[in-house]
Amino acid sequence: MPDFMKAAVLEEYQKPLVIREVPYPKPGRGEVTIRILASGLCASDLHLQDGRIPSSHVPYIPGHEMVGEIYELGEGVDRPLGQRVLGFIDITCNTCRLCTSGRANLCLSLKRLGFELDGSHAQFCRLPAQNAVPICPEVPVEKAAVIPDAVACMYHAIREKGGVRAGDRVLILGVGGLGIQGIQILKYFGAEVYVTSRQDQKLEIARSFGADLCINTGRQDLTEEIRRFTGGEMCDVVLDNIGIASTIEQSLQVLRPAGRVVVIGYADQEFTAVYQHIMLKEKEIVGCRASNLHELKEVIRLVERGVIDPYIYRTYPFEAINQALDDLRNGKSLGRTVLVF
Ligand SMILES: [Zn+2]
Ligand SMILES: [Zn+2]
Image (cartoon, rainbow, N blue to C red; front, top):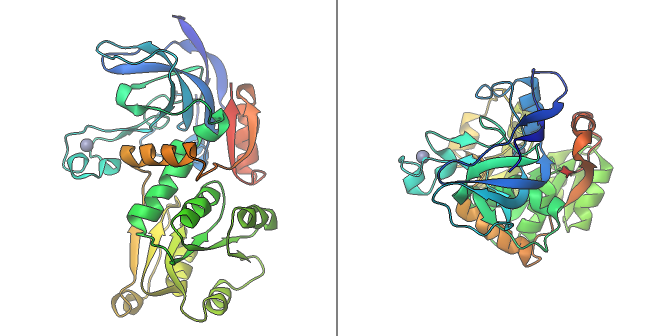
């Protein structure tokens, strides 16, 4: 085993990552070390780089969307070397009240790869063996890499938090890296899908994945368009991938009575809601964080069967990580981007 590996290290907040040699992460008891094949980028990488995620600390290695091969086994682990696996981000205690009631995504002692722990923007990553989830090697690595975050999170949002059923009218606010994957899941569940963006190119991509209504909120009135398209019946579920005050307020406007807004976007704002819209109309606002391990396993099967084809906007070589982060920050990315080793 090597003594060192190459990694992109966040040494200081609000600075570019530094590619340098760091010690090879030797697996401990119950762990495996995987050799990274591809590592996805996410808006959280920008929040982390900016120092907006209080639980993170520097220096460390970000990266939380990973696919790799099992490279070394820790004590007590029996797994085939070379097995193609995804890294499940959440490291959970498996004993707290939330873990034991099927909500491990809210584990009371949750730690995350690429947030509180070293992640996958590196040649190798160490993780608990149960977090290394097998995937068929025929799935291209760049598509596989985004499954644990972008695809699994939308699956959790749609099925578990949104409770979407066939025939539901579902609006995705802010169709980007997550939303495009969401369209495919919603179509699979038999929903009618509406999406918004201020970029026509993103709406074009959404349309090619089957979105029924594409609204450019830069020049169209959201509430008016939804009212017209639904004959005034409005949306059953809104998936708010933006998650700022104005989008939650808009979501409540376009919901039918007893409809549900699922808040997925990450923001540190506050919002106001009209009390009577919630009470008299029984509208619900629910949070959504990541996904559970069993949901990741279900989503992997859907990808392997070709039901979901994860959409990747472009790939970069690992060494171009700072370019890739800048492009993401400057809105040059129209979907998920992935570093390939
Ligand atoms: Zn993420
Ligand atoms: Zn727990």
